[in-house]
Image (cartoon, protein in one colour):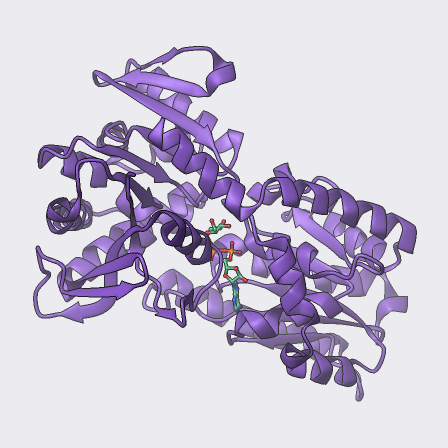
Length: 460
Ligand code: ADQ
């Protein structure tokens, strides 16, 4: 039987057989436990020099974890520079926030080559290789140069933009050529796949082959590249179980006691400009302006731990949000009511799920998002007998499936304010219907389905 070799920028630390982070790590780990295999990536450590060989090897059941360390220069050019300060903004349509440097692009390629050199000796003839995300667009190219002929696929967790947006990255042609060395390129939504296919057909002299019914297959650079749409999901029953468990409810109970029967709007994000937090704060302010009756009766809880704080744009957005939160509270707060609670910290998943469950409205308003698992976790955590309402950005990948949410445009403050008002006053029957409809889709497109469909298409 073929083994699965998973490659991601970071290998998630595993404790007691479980990854310490959510989503992707959980899905990948399940697949590896079932099939047995290898998980390869950066250790998260900076060393004096980067290594061509794995610097650590750890065995967890049928899984072998291999990690490499990166030098400061590689980390700066590959991770902090090209991956997160050029590709991330471009993939999220935030071209005004990105910058480009050919040296950093060379560093990105160098680390993809380094990964390939460290990984190639580990790969056995029947293995299938599954790379994850925008950090590794050039990995298959580097593996092919080393003579690796195995099936290699990549799943992009982020959006893939329309070609004119992608072309703002000066190295766009090199990146697409490298992506065409994969056998399978997977996306979260049809829009993302169409962006990639459109680029290949229009700008690489590529062609569509086969029947669209069988998926979209492209021919370019003398190769055949399958593309597919695999919306990532969550383990719905596990989320609800965590939300209900008495042992997890300490934070949720404290929150409920402090609310004193006020209604709760809740958002949870990494602190990232793509998540639309600034526009969201503005929409909440607009809601307080437009719905004076809600003042004193509704609290908005925003949980947003800092991420990538060694990048200037991330420091700026954090600073800006602190100012906005203070201003909105200064404007509307009463002696006994603070409208906006802004927490710059993370919570363990076990504590987060019961918090979702007590929120009347889950407010998820990214400007662009590959999927957004918070939206799915929020829905899965609800009590089906008395569920909360999801207000969801049309620009999150999740909106393609969760069309029973209140879908909004995150740039439209009035529209978001109106949706908040509507969500907070929605009748039980409508809430139940919308929730049941979203649960049906989420059960079908589970995390298991995501993984099984991708690995089946990569194998076949
Ligand atoms: P992210 O941008 O990190 O992921 P998202 O999908 O919302 O975004 O969150 C991933 C996980 O992190 C979720 O399980 C969530 O519970 C957890 N998380 C988020 N904020 C947290 C907080 N404040 N405290 C604790 N946990 C928190 C990328 C893409 C997404 C895509 C995922 C998976 O950007 O679009 O959905 O990968 O493919």
